[in-house]
Image 1 (cartoon, rainbow, N blue to C red):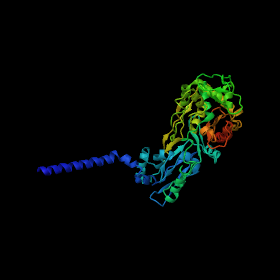
Image 2: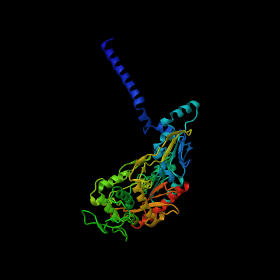
Image 3: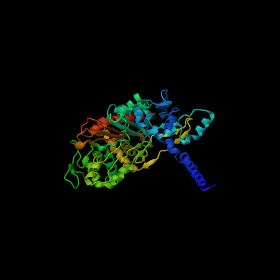
Image 4: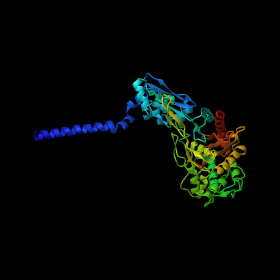
Length: 489
């Protein structure tokens, strides 16, 4: 072979080698990413080529599938009481993708999860059509209905937890949306429905999951955390002993007095009375005396400054890490830069009710294959211990006083022991906007254990600027949610 032919042969060989390398790279190295690529339409077509599995509440599906004939997507997602359950399910849309449980558990719901490989293979051999598995939630249908109907046309959110396990029992957010309205891919109907729900078109932002993704100033509900810090760090040992708390109290290193709301007996008040009447002066001074490091330690044990995954992501609640003494005082009464999701404040009430142990919140009990085999079973996990059992029981007694004879009387349930804390959080520059009305609570069963802890925030209230507004607007909603859980036991 002469030299020119040899060079051509070598060059052709290199081209063939490059082609083989590229082909293998695409087939084996990039296969997974290409298969999941958002622009790979074959993936979407396959996703909707068979009915999706269902999301289950109380043993019944709250989702479904319907066959279509207008596109190459054979099946479309449907929802029962879509507005009520949207904060739990999210959406699965042929045009706009999926969110929340519909997205996180997509592999199970479509039947494509690797854990279902054996079942898929068996179905392929037997000629049986592929079908998705089911996601069984921890949600309580009656509690969710009470939360959703209680919020009504008000803007706000509810989160309820089983303190003993961390199981989420209710997760409501209003205003909401019906995922069925844009589950297909029609330009005339689905796209128009989607556009109307976007924040630019709808300032109320109905697609925002306020229970998990919105952080609010918690106002006086945060005083439960400050009370826990005072007990746990030994600043207060007897909730019924008078504190050294002048009224008015001037914040350290300033000439600024921290005011109380209304004519309430806060001078040297006991910690119990300070929680009952929601004394800013007492809890501001407690936070300042403890200092930011001890307050931060307690807040973070309750879950602040860390995202939660339930498995849907919940935004991190915030307790500031860099504060001077006056800012520490303000943060300790739920002001300054303190911010919390409703889920976070439900976790606070939950840990107190569970004798000081905080369980990790979750809302998927188990994943199931199409033949009802359990693919994965959730096991409750302890997250932290913000309080000792003794101090938790002291704080329970204080919170029960709030409901028996304080600002939370509208949460009373006949023959049931209820503990709670009201709050009205400042909103806007110089507090010129309507405040946020808060209530956190728990209820005890006949055996003394607590099957439910609740946090409620009403965002657009016309309430007066005092803690009674939290008791007036949010407490009745919490009461109905707690009753629904107790009656279902």
